[in-house]
Length: 332
Image 1 (cartoon, rainbow, N blue to C red):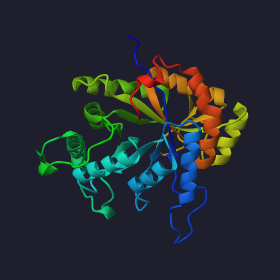
Image 2 (image 1 turned 90 degrees about the vertical axis):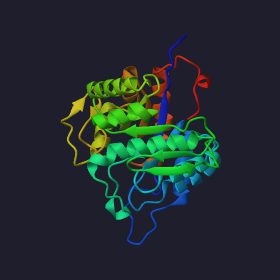
Image 3 (image 1 turned 30 degrees about the vertical axis):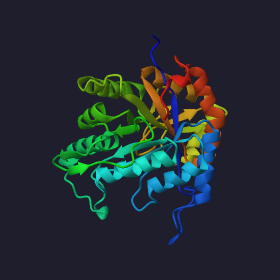
């Protein structure tokens, strides 16, 4: 039997036009802009959209419910920060979104101790144990058909039984983090281990680390790998670098890896700079290492959704033939 290969593109949704600073007292939510971004991602061939989390920003689950009504097939990857609510309540909310979106919901886990302004003051050393319990309880709440008890260090539940279960057979969970503890957590619970953009050699090491952790949990084939990359395109390589310099005048071109990966420009990821053909080949190189899910973003969410959908995604798909038809894969 042929081995399974999957290629997934995730865009990024913004609740407003982020190119301009928000005036004092203005509401950080533009429903028309949000809807336009979501429809552009769907029309451009993206499989899903990340709805991020920021302190004091609009609630991601509510944003996802709105986007679900604006689109037909776009997956909804909602960033979810631990420590702000009980996992059983989160399980209820995501199950509800899953029904309203016809099975398109997914969860992107964040647990960095949460902001104290929202009441989360857990000590750093306790974060991994909390994440482990939280995800175990989430899965239990989604799957149990009988009342159950849970007795952990961080969470205790007695007689819980959800009235509403997932529409999907399994709601995808994306986990990240570069530490050994994060690798263990992903090996135990993640459907997708999400990495920040780094050179090929570093990504290969991270994939090996998480694969080993998953194998120890008996989940060697259960964890897929995702990568977040910013992208700057140009009709020529020179134009792409010139455009990158205009977008990020503070950055230096000194750290270039793997032909077109520019590091040190962004706090949480690297940037691919080049023509659509060059950048597509860079994606293919990551895919050969085992990356199957790409979070693709630029610096202007609406314009990038249109440009990437027209110029980049088709070229990447041409370079990465799937070994099984798309119908063989579970839905997002």
